[in-house]
Image (cartoon, rainbow, N blue to C red):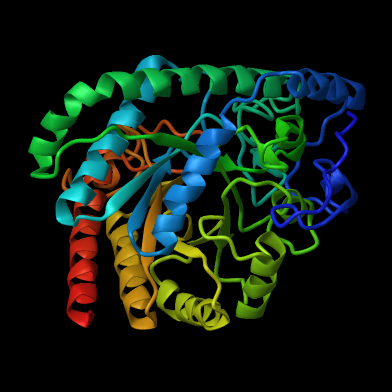
Length: 434
């Protein structure tokens, strides 16, 4: 696929050596391994000719909202499915995610006057990195399931073939999902007073913008949906409002960092226990050399047992560098364990990692900027604990995820309640310090 000519260097796009396809010359991990290159090219051409999924003006709106988070004036609530499914997709499922984020945001705003930026893991989260390229059951070994945009979850050879036509299905579902989000946003305004009353929110209701986000994993998909905007003289990824780079694909000289450094969108960077402070600072310089507020979100994902060891030196180094970033916490991926042969997470560990994140941020003089959750509005039994007291015996009752375990609605609201208390405490501490 032929890429458009790069613009002249500007402050927004400071390097003449970047183009939407420059990632192809870099080492890449976790990409799909398609058996038919010509079929891939045909799909990429179709996607390149499609309309943007999101408006550039809305991406700029998100950048502005995230700049307020960087200034300590707002908080990011990011959540949704671990991986979106073709088979389970319907309007009710999208509505459940929308309503859950709406209610959680109201809970947070009830605890503090801080604004909430609603950022859904939706309309693009169709692929997942995997720790192993293959999966073995009995004596049969097949390629791992990498999300519906790559292959199918069924354990048979035909389903596990990497099929580029699935990118077209993912794109169509993302289009419909975004249309549904717009419809729910228009309809939900009448429900906001009721939601506010349920959580004790006294502030007058205001319209909520639901931004979309996903991991920028399948770079041929992202490239095909990258557009150059004459007004801003900038390239934008129009597949979603915010993209993030995973902990497995954040190599400084790698393809994913190369792609993300050239787009105008806000970019998230997952930071796990293996990242050193010097490496993080080099990544920040590569991804955001002009230190633009609202551009870069650092998403910690350490686990409850490691967060108090690994997070403080990273926060300290970034603050010492004077960089204008947002810190959030993903308390899901570092807290996965196996019970009865199934991956699960304990709500208590999730809350403990979030609490430690707030404590470390306060100690380091950093604004705790948000949370990043894998969750669903459905009544699943994939994580244990919470006010519903889900126990080991409940695990198999409604274990529906194709990848990672998600909080159900009640558990997600439990987490929001705890976070609301932490936000209130942080706000009070700041007021006393002032």
